[in-house]
Length: 125
Image (cartoon, rainbow, N blue to C red; front, side, top):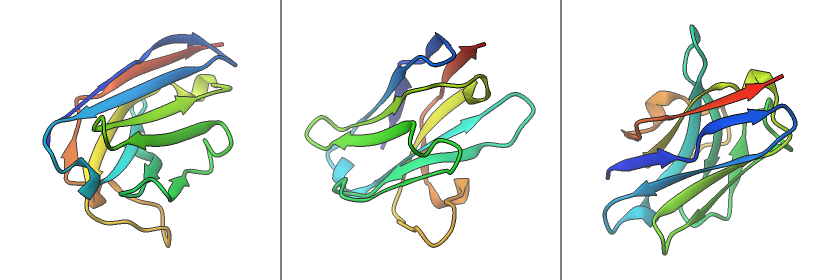
């Protein structure tokens, strides 16, 4: 599967952005989808994940209550709605596809097999 993320940009603190990630292929619904982010000088970190059908979601504590992940399997697209953004949300955001679903621990980059190219989100204070 090939992934392409878009929708990043510059937003003021407290504002909102919606990221989208379009997937190629006809088996989108067979993948767990996730969003990760990487700030300058930091490791890539988990943000949110959604199960194959979209009935389960999982969030990092740092975004819980502010970000919402969703998917539309008919459109082969996963979304990340980001509200009440903070300067510390500034990062390159990556979408990823994998086969494993877990809520017993924080997902890692190793849990995902395919990655998009990333889209930059900058939150100004």
